[in-house]
Image 1 (cartoon, rainbow, N blue to C red):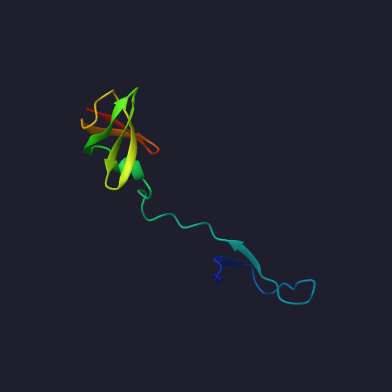
Image 2 (spheres, helix red, strand yellow):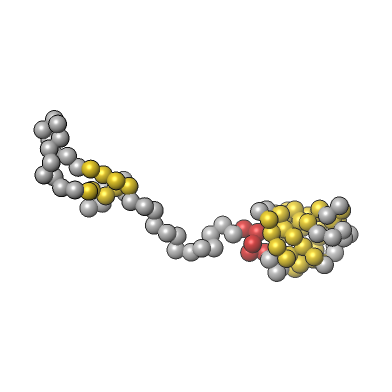
Length: 98
């Protein structure tokens, strides 16, 4: 039987607690696995997309604008406005190449 708090009843009501009432032992059920494995992939979904640099890549770092979000990028030094393709990601930083 499952309680409202996600607990499973274990055992039976045959045992008596020291106070004389019925006793029920509860244990937590392990969480259900997610139905999908691509939840919160964020930057990984951008791999393969082409875009233009918002700011120049200088010393290996620059930015691109995707929708209403500015993303940090790493790659070879290129001027602002250059076309780049996302080839990978490391957390919230995209790796790009011309």
